[in-house]
Length: 182
Ligand code: PRP
Ligand code: MG
Ligand code: MN
Image (cartoon, rainbow, N blue to C red; front, side, top):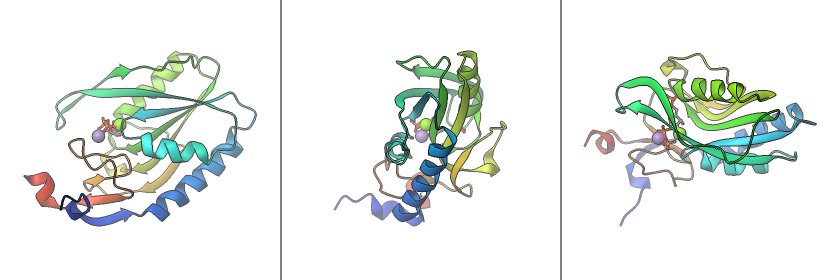
């Protein structure tokens, strides 16, 4: 049978642990953004699953929008440049922005996006990410809300892909080496 689970070596963050982080971050955002004009921006594609759950844990009026960005170059050598593949469809000027990511790795994506938001005249910008890999950081990024810190392993699931697959796993897992080595 075709199963995506058989490619997973271990569960790194279970569905229960994900939902605990969603509730914790949702409550913190609800307190921190009360009275603000809030727009929550999910970064495609990886953030879609966390975005969907997190916005339901935030008890505030909000707009939502999405951006898709991509680093130049191959997946192994990043030139540090980021381009916008899909921009926002709403204006962020004067609003309080919460950027939602699935994972912060080198920090290139978020250091770029933070600058873009500031250049567009936002009132403030904060970042929420389910996962962070501090050992991989190349650019300093001020991440306001973190679900879990993870080691530098090949993680997939809950939005995160390997070669565009495994985004539909209901938890964050580590792939078996034979999957990414072939
Ligand atoms: C991944 C992830 C973050 C980014 C983090 O997205 O979803 O957006 O990389 O990496 P960085 O901190 O090194 O910039 P990716 O570009 O793979 O696109 P995807 O979300 O569509 O999978
Ligand atoms: Mg992404
Ligand atoms: Mn990806």
